[in-house]
Image (cartoon, rainbow, N blue to C red; front, side):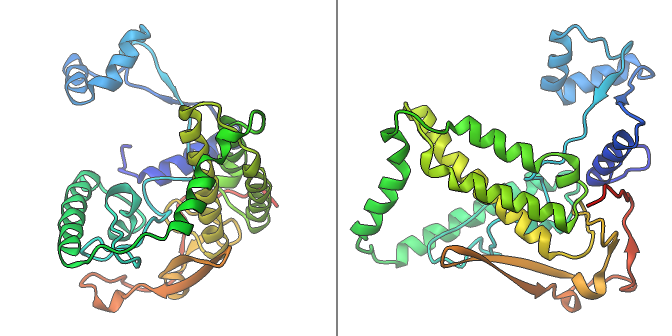
Length: 303
């Protein structure tokens, strides 16, 4: 933290240290003054309360860190694409907050931007949706479509036995969270992840939900598996390293060829991917050059 490294860089560095046998990683606050700890209790009271309840004295004891670079992080993994009015490409559908915030951010979120974007996008989405509702006539419902969606959503309640939602969550995490799949990617390993996700998706028709609580989790699990696939489809296409996205075969940022957005859309039952150039010529601040820049943390797991 002393050199103000980005969180994604720290995570990758932590993983590299552990994978190369120099773990574990510790957070050492033993040199903090009483005033420093008093400030921590004011600023992050919930976090400090956890240590207090566990009888961990941070002034005397180091705390082990576990690097975690999961599938869905704060930046770089996309979300619903919206314009400055928070409109999506679907008429009447608006997005705000973490589901959409990546486009304004780029590949890194500076302190305070999360809350600012939450407030601004929520306000704009609400205003835009209200204006749309005022001038739009009520449309007839598609009863057939509603019946299909209702059947899909409630189907797990009709199965007495089958795959549980927690099993699906565990399966997705087992294949997506390990460092060699999430933090340090390679084409062959990405394809293995996608193949396993296809297997998991094929089991979703067997998911069961004996109660309303599990029914919610069953539908969340279905969405979770689908979102994981979208993340790795995009990771397979991006042949460079940028932010938290690291490809072993391409350990550099390549602005000349990859200053682009990857846009994913449904194409029938498959996922379509297209590329769109970032309009850097419109931006007041531009890269000084477009040379390839080595990624700050490099590690080779192997195929």
